[in-house]
Amino acid sequence: MPEGPSIVILKEALQSFTGKKVGVAEGNAKIDFEKLQGLKILELKSWGKHFLISFNGFYIRIHLLMFGTYMVNQRKPSTTPRLRLSFKNDEINFYTCSVKLIEEDIDAAYDWDADIMNDTWNPEKALKKIKILKDDMLCDLLLNQELFSGVGNIIKNEVLFRIRLHPASLAGSVPTPKLKEMVKEARIYSFEFYEWKKAFVLKQHWLIYGKRKCPRCNIPSKAEHIGKGKRITYFCENCQKLYD
Image 1 (cartoon, one colour):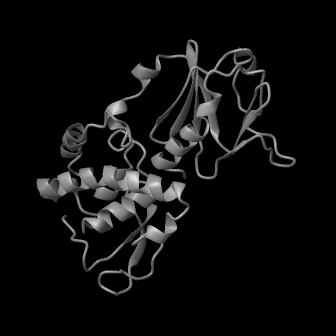
Image 2 (image 1 turned 30 degrees about the horizontal axis):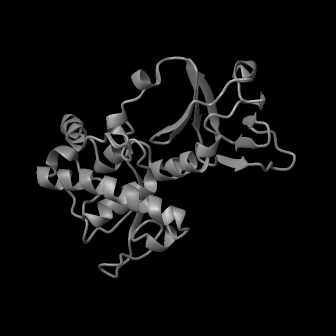
């Protein structure tokens, strides 16, 4: 599933479409395509894993789910896109994703302070929410999009390894300084992820995600499905401290 940094890259890649008028909107998503035709794209935004295309009075929310992709001025052979936006000389195609047309105010719908890569990101607010969810595991808290919008499984694993915290640690048992470190590192790593992804070197920087050995201890690492969502989690039992 694309994480927040990848959606920021998507937003940047499509910025040239801002101000362009939609000629034809089509696809197999269950939305009113006619509503889009003839309208100009006012703004492109991202919130965590959501890509947002703003029009006058409404916006389209695109979530790439696990295997979603997009193509500019290209099409997948024999594949109907979920959404195709055609312009005078260009087109954008979105595949294998969730597409919704939303008419509520975008600023009312999204807490921009929770977006790990937004300029308004509020670490103190995140820490307060963590304190309330004291019985949750750290692996669940980092994937909670109301706290860390944009953080996904890769960032979760790498952040916890960096700060030497066991993913099954309970928030209420972890010292506050370590929780603050986790909050801070989540943002730092997200921007590093962004730079590495743009340079096509992201995997080269993974320390624990997908690894069979801990690079610090040189012993076998663990790979277990833990937490509420049972997402695959990589960790080292030796150097990542468990607070329970």
